[in-house]
Length: 380
Image 1 (cartoon, helix red, strand yellow):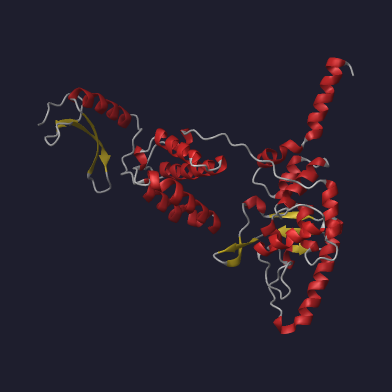
Image 2 (cartoon, rainbow, N blue to C red):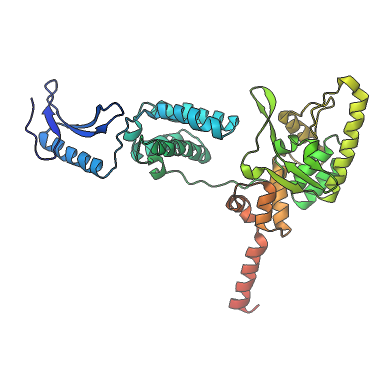
């Protein structure tokens, strides 16, 4: 049964099947000139009138888009194909797809993008926390959803990024373990004569990522000047060892080498040359600085196992190769190297990132503040 339409009400009618009242407002027209409408419903006509007025006000204020909104699942797939495939490395896309597949789509995948609410995102994140996921994982879920919704705004399929308004658990960044100066020297001493002595020493002295060090080629190394240029990374992907772009644009950088590291690399180059001659045709020329005994790239997984043996020989507990990077940053900062310089050496995307991860190491500054207050307040 149709009802009488008031000024600016839109179309209001009562559905005969269940007696509910519905109101319809014109949102705009699509590319073919077909009208795009939005509807509201309620058990009474008065409530529909109220909701329809709110809807019309949102339309007038530009809070609703005239583009037909896709489901979140469709938006994610378009984002992956049209944006991420061109802008980020394969490993990042695979990580994002895993997050979307297992943590977002099962709950929100069929939801229209423009109908997604802050409350629904809050409930999703709360459920993930309750399931035992780490806060850092829940933060990544929210971040991936937020990035996709930002793209949805640019594509005019939604007007609000509700993920940005959602609540997330407090993220406490764990402090990575770092070698003390004494432990670092013990490690270097135990490496003497080891096949990967130059590799581990380089990582500890420069803070280079494992994949960056393994991805170095001799054409990137200037032993006369004592400089290496980081241009690529080596990683395992799809069961194979492959080269890839560095993590970020700032990861592509030049790094100055301490003189002992340059000397180690010179000896390493000579030893590699002898292996090449001894193997003859069996040697596989790849150009990499660090290789297997037949010239092939080193599998990052094998490096982990090898490093465990090195640590045991040095009398240390189990350490991960990536902790050499943490140790390098900590030792530089503790020695007075400026935060900005350390950030550049590490190839961090911003100095803020370096400060967030390693700021707690700047103890001399805090100790100086404590001594100053002792002098002012207690005259000591």
